[in-house]
Length: 278
Image 1: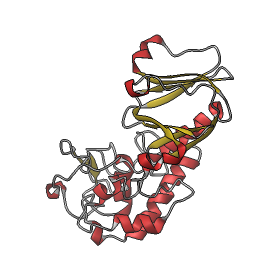
Image 2 (image 1 turned 90 degrees about the vertical axis):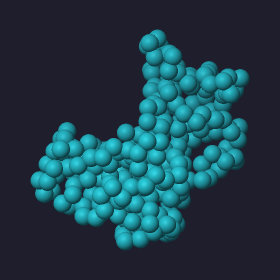
Image 3 (image 1 turned 120 degrees about the vertical axis):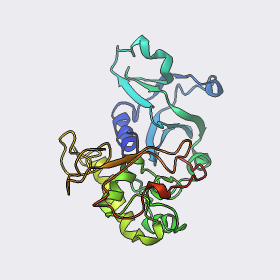
């Protein structure tokens, strides 16, 4: 699922086809960018902040995109085109001077801004373990700022720490050995931040480790709890439980947990919360 490690790996994949190349044709298929033309600009960097992709061009322009749950980028080799059946999902087309073309499908929150103004789009985000400016102390301060906030809700809040989505929130709760709804004030927050940063970096940077949280890459054994409802816990054998999200409440998404390995409050403690940023 698209999380910070997903977008980081995507950026490195786009680097291989576009970095240092000049755009010879651009097509931005959203109404507010329909007249924007990036042709003639060189791709100078694919930066990420949490789940946000920032494609920087020469001349000081940045294309911002967010994958949310269903967005994707794909690249075709020279002479190849995207199948026509997918054209209705196209939002961005960037053809490079090499003939390779990057196609953005179902992208969200698209914007083109001056590179110096990127903070208008991502300045609200918390520290990101995959960035050079990662600040674990600031992340711990933000995560612990509201002691009553449940563990998974705090991890999902991108203004506290950027890049952790629902998979990592659930898996980190298991690795911490506490219920997903444990109040943050009861946890060792700096230790949690260290574990989260280490896990995200390992997933993003180590070949074969992408979103494998158990150390076992075999299908069905790669996650401790996420997606394993009614199956035995890989640690103790207890049946993993799952509760659906609260409607229109991103702080309380679908949650998995092992009631034996993760003692603490249950889902009955959930309360609707204000919408948080992605």
